[in-house]
Structure formats: structure tokens, C-alpha cells
Image 1 (tube, rainbow, N blue to C red):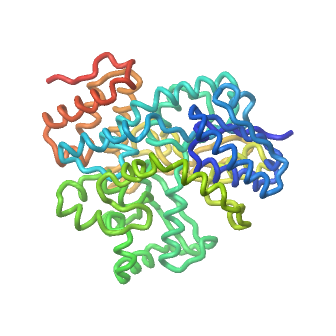
Image 2: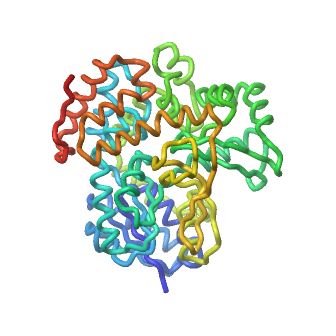
Image 3: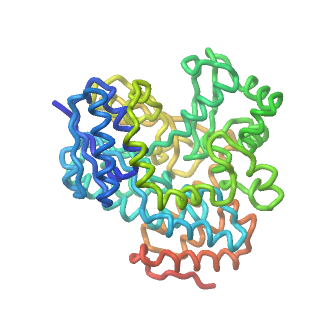
Length: 448
């Protein structure tokens, strides 16, 4: 029987195009029904055209439907992909600009800290509504989330809907593994690794080339080749101090600790040089959003006019299609790093927090692979963020402003820059900016 794959937030054109392309490369899915759903009719129409173009170029017997009705998209789906953005750049900018008023300098702001937490507060209620529809219309589906903040959203969905098959995916694990292989001149097919931690701050606990420890080669490349050291200032400094390499880019990771963004001189030294993925400048991603806000239609129309090459139609390195194939395709097992609640998977991180760990996809479903203990120095760093995320998710679910305040109090960058009183004022200002998204909160301010 042909399979049905539902895309919720299909107006996220980059994700939708790439993931559809990957799905259709598998024999089991060549005749799949691709159900695209978005609340933005204009973006949805563009996504439908893009998918039809891929189907035609690949000569696949697949079909595509587009709808603004989430239930219709989900009904009978075997797999679900979630790529939504709740609120546009004009609300997202408050996550970045309000902390800046208080000297908390943010580069991306989509994962944790004050900006990531308020993004969670806006987004989690929508994600829970999506889960309700999944439970009703396709309860056995494999649900893969790409929406950030990854850890907090997955933690919220998995705790409220433990019966659903949900995990979250981030391409930083395989992307960084490929980057390190290039640095040491190794073919990726000869590399193996074990990676674990929390989203955007997982670490390669081992990284091997032909079965031998490749960390000495990585260290040598960083110390001996300025072009490699300069490509990832923050991550390379973290590696040289912590002895293990972190997954997410320098711009992101500069926000998740107290070492790189608390003073102007440190930002200039570590964060504003070029990186492989994104620069560490203040508000980098926000500025990219704002640049596209008025031109996105023109850009998409131009993109859709370009012919698709044979190389484009080749499978990319995102995990989603291979996971679907392992569970309800040809059942070829597939190991990947996913975001899942910590049920003694990493023994020295909080029970129940969201961890990013190896997962085995097979016809059994999704099985987490036990990691054991993280090295002590990594556990300290991960514990701070994981416990802040736990507070934030519980506060989001309960509508408790004070729990949100407490979560932000201990954020490493925020606490390195601000006093308790300054954090309270900042949090209250952020609550005020987000009030229309938070009707379930009992109060939208924190008093002394």
C-alpha cells in the first residue's frame, strides 16, 4: 500500500522541498501521498508547486495534496513532519531586542535562554494542539519535529502525549561530523562516532576514523591550521577546554554558556569572525528573517523557475526519510541522533529532561540507545541548560510566570550579565510583548 506523509508547516519551503526529495528517493515511497498543510495559503501554494516540480522531475508516481485543514492532512498519515513557525519576525524580534536593552547579546535566539524560552511559550500550545489532532487522526504515525526550540518543545509534547511516537531532529550532528571529517581529510564513510548530550550542545564522546581515535588529528588540525581554528572560534575553544567537540555552530553555542558573549571585547574576539554555518554577530538570524520578509515571494518565484538537476534529486543528509523507511518502508534499520526524554539514557543528566542521543529506527519503532554517564565537565554544562529547560517547560504547561522567571535566572549568559532585579525587569518586559500569545498564563508579570 502507498504511504501518506503529512507536512505540518509546509510553507517552510526549504525544509519541505528537501524532505520531499529525500522521501521520494526510497522505493517504498515513490508512490506516496504527500499531504501539505499550512495556515498561510500563499506559502502553501508555492510549496505545492515545488513538490509537483520534484515529482515531475523524478518521474515519480507520487501525488501531492495541499490544504489548510490540519485534520485532513493528518488523517491516516504514516509519518508526520512538523516545521512550523509561530508568529513572524515582528514578534520574534522582541525575543532578541528586549534582552539587548539589558546587555544580553543574542545571536540566534531559537533554542534556550530568554529568547528561546519565550519562543517556547508562544509555540508549545500550538504543538500540543497538533499532537491532539495526531492522536485523533493518525495515532500510530512516526512524528518528526524540526521546529525550534527543539528540546523544550519535544519535552512538552512527549510528556503530555507519551503514547505518540515523537522525536525531534536537528542536522547539526551529521553536519558537524562531516565538517570534522573534512578537517582531517577522512572520507565520511570511514567515520564512526557516538554523540550525546542536549540539543545544540551534544558532544562527540568518541569520533573514529577506521576504528581509531581521530581526536588527536582534530586537535592537530585546529592548532596547526589557522583557517580551521578561525572557522569555528567558539567551538574550537570549547573543544580545547572541554576535550570533546560540540555539535552546533559557534554562533549558536556562544549563547549557551557564560564564556563568549558577556563583554564586547569577547564578542569581538570570538564571535564576529566568519564561521562555517552562521556568524556570531548580534541578531544574525533575525536580520536574515527581516531581509526576506518583503522579498520572499520574489525569491521563491525565481527559485521555482530554475530547472532541477540530477544532483538535486539525490538524497540529502537529513534523517527523516531514512527513519520513515526503517519503520514503515523497507525496514532497513537506521541509527540517528534524536531528541527524546531522558529515561536513564544519560545517567548524570536530569531524569525526564530532553536529551539528544542515538536512536535506532526499525519496524519495532524508535528505540533509544543507552549512553551511560557523560564526562563530568560536559554533564555540568548540560545540566545547567537542561534544568533551566525543565523549569521553562513546566512553567509553560502550568502558565506560571514565576517558573519562567526562575528558568531565565539561571541561564548561563543571562546570569553572567545581569542582576536578579535586572532579569526580573527584562522578563516582565518580554511577557508584555508576548501577551497575546499567552492567554493561559495566570499573570504576565513577576513581582518581588
